[in-house]
Amino acid sequence: MVAAVSRAHTRRRFTVHARSPHSFDGGGVLTDTSWRDRKRDRTRQQIVLAARHLFLTQGFDRTTVQQIAEAADVAVQTLFNHAASKEALFFLDRVPFADALTRPAEAGEESWDQTLVAHLTELSIGYMRSLDDPGNLAMATQIEATPSLHRHERSLHNQVEGELAEVIAAHLPDADARLGAAVLLATTRVHAHTYRQHLIAGAVPPLCLDQLAEVLPVRLAHVFAVARHAQPAPHPAPAR
Image 1 (cartoon, rainbow, N blue to C red):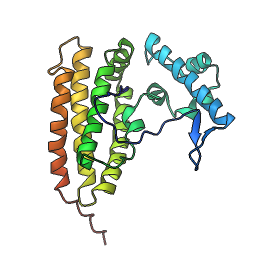
Image 2: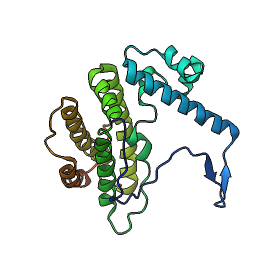
Image 3: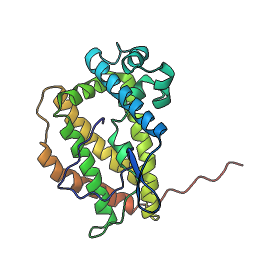
């Protein structure tokens, strides 16, 4: 999944860490970040825009790192300071789960489980809605058609799964956090990829987004309930 759009009807209770030209100091005062940070942000934006344009117009396989560097007016090494590979450049700043799934805040009126399910639903439906944009759908089409991009996307999902497991373990220490993270993200991924593949093929998805927005949280809640009541698997005894 490569893009996401937030929806106003779902209350977000998760902290999203994002770069900003300003930050709050310890006393809550808005202060300018350093010139170096602002310069790095501008350079990153140049790289992102250049890479997306070339990938969109030329395709992933026909675009070289050198071409992206020239279009962004930076050195090739500068590119690799922001992304470790061409595949990583393709996904740069386009991975909502990695960017948005951080530390949940207090649940408030809802239980922590409900807060988590609502957040995952918001991210998933937001991503699927983003595919209404022809540019986003074209990028998704390249992912489906390019094995190296498909593998990289899966590696990003695996990374996020590990981060989500840590979040679950911190809030629900008696649950099997790894199982919970795996089943939750597998559920969102199956729905999103099925929807994406139907759009790419020019077919009507099995469920419209309004239906998915109703169905997905119910399914997430069911699979999470299983993980919540499963005891963590014991660590194997060391070999003698």
